[in-house]
Image (cartoon, rainbow, N blue to C red):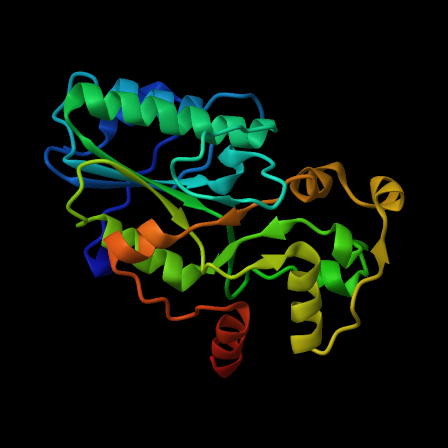
Length: 252
């Protein structure tokens, strides 16, 4: 990384003392891509970062990745950035806690805060092909929840665009805007890579054969309105659908 002009700083976000060595962030751009801890309802990583900046020069802007899980189950409805958050599992509550802390800190310190609420991310090395090969069951298509995703490269372009958008502080839904569901996603992957489609089950069978972690995702259904992302960030997606992304990966 040093050869590319990047100076890595090793710190433990769970250890406030280790953050004392962070570089001067005065008038800088900060990207926050760090996940919260794996348990609890709050994000002490963000709390520790903000505490470390309390007596130091402040950055000009922070761009943070959050999750569409903060909306909770919307029963397939279309949600925009003004839809009230309603997280129903702890992993989403931790992300909303991060958002809330960072936004309040931004208001108090006159720092622009951009929140990117991202659906599922796919790309090279980020496809559930092993799960498909193992034949882990899916919900029947008529029971499958609506879901949202974006190619990792397009997400990176959104992050770059968020660094210069003119509005001081803003929330953006981030996805390719395709109307899809979880079972369709897995079927598309299986067909594209020549793998057998996983078996499908009803809810009673799913609760016996699918992990609790995956069930928590299957119990939430929502579609994302990405109008704000497209209009304000000027994003022209390179991969406007899953098939576009998969075909590009195959060429690589």
